[in-house]
Length: 396
Image (tube, rainbow, N blue to C red):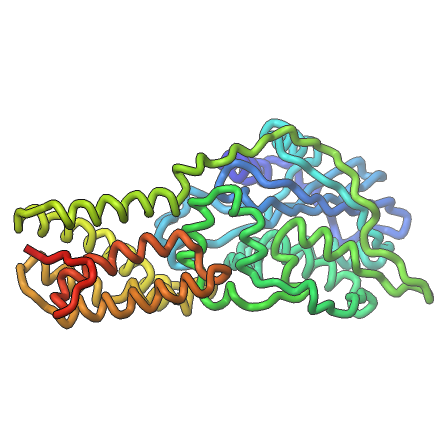
């Protein structure tokens, strides 16, 4: 959060003469660098960051441009974020201030010289200046297709034009958006679980080299494979990486007993024990109301992100199979003390199907959902009053 507000403040106070102007002369000595920043502890910094440094030796300026800024004071911030309508913006600061922040937060920064000629640099500066206009400085953020990394990729592509050449696509290296995200979120099992719950079919799409550049480290690796066709030669787009800020941060591993699969397995055991020992109708009703209320909250969330958000990454979410509106109708039945056997039985069938898929496709569905879905399956089985009941549990 501090980083984002820092850039907003600096965007106001950095002098206008420090801006990269499109009217550079042929005698200007300008260097451009891609800055790739390592992940941080904050949620928004989990996947790292990308920025572009423009150093003008003649003018004595050294500016870093950053397309990853948003304002926490935005009106209805949480609602806009949930709806996928939060606007990000371009801001800039001095290179020294930029490094100071990453030194303070103990995050790695890697620099790579971008091998642009003067004409390409002038084109790039014109595009940045155009982007800094009040009507263009903000943009609708999209994690896969329009973020701080893809903005830099697009800028360089437009500056170089058709002379920027991509290597042949290697399908052996293709993964999915979800797998690329998981490389970082796996450090935090709960974050990984939450992402797996919200990720829709867009996250299952296979990615090309260019697609993977939505992540800062993949942008660096991807651009390092590109060449510029110049005067009959093939010039690498990026020079070799140089670490300008080293990180000594050590990622703390989550206690295995506090991971989602451990916690939900423990809860499943508790639910089974309570179901077998509670003899009071009131106690059983209270337990099931709590269980179905919590799953109804998840069902509402999944339904909202599937149909009422601009986040295309969350549409087509397979969790709607078991976290369906029938979970909510079952909760209503419990509150009104109605049987609604059809509702409970529908929940049971869909939940069993999902659980089976989770067991069969462990690489597609986070295993932590197995004990969680079994909690819902057990209680919907009991409330469905099937003539057969392998658990021998009955609703009182």
